[in-house]
Length: 113
View 1: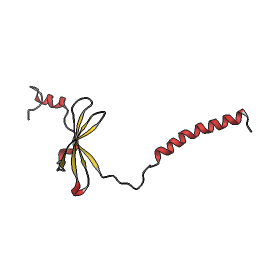
View 2: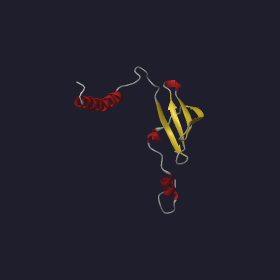
View 3: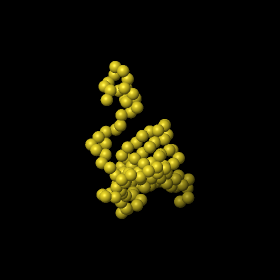
View 4: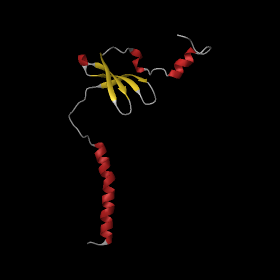
């Protein structure tokens, strides 16, 4: 059964199996049973279009610490470590943008706090 039709059917079957295999790989977990320590971004300060200063909380319970990281497109650098602090209730609100802060200080617009 080595006819051109049979070869074409095998080719179509292989082509149909590729998306199915990719879908299956996407749904599978590669590493099971490992738990990562929770982490969260406490704050972010954009320094330029591609550079940021991040404060990240890592660890659990009494072992929480804050890491101050310098982030660029090519690297992440640890700048400082701090004991975890209470960020307060306002920590869930995003910081005001520079434009909003500037608008607040312009004469005749907003209140000067």
